[in-house]
Figure (cartoon, helix red, strand yellow):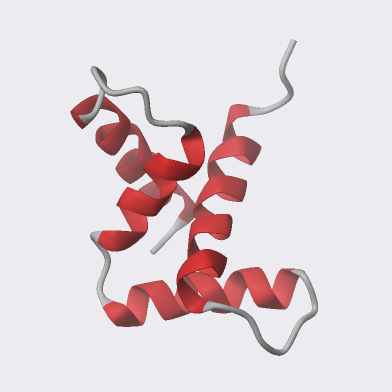
Length: 78
């Protein structure tokens, strides 16, 4: 899954839940829940590689990668 695909998936998921009061991490978790196990593992691997760690919880690491990607794409907050 590319960074662009992550951002688009996040945006669509956020639109799907526009009336709810979900925070960004909750939306990222919804994105990860929709992925295949291989995609989740890939995202988790990217997070663990970026943090230079050998182990970590797969789901939480994948959510962290989605969140980091979206926040990086948003740029600095004014």
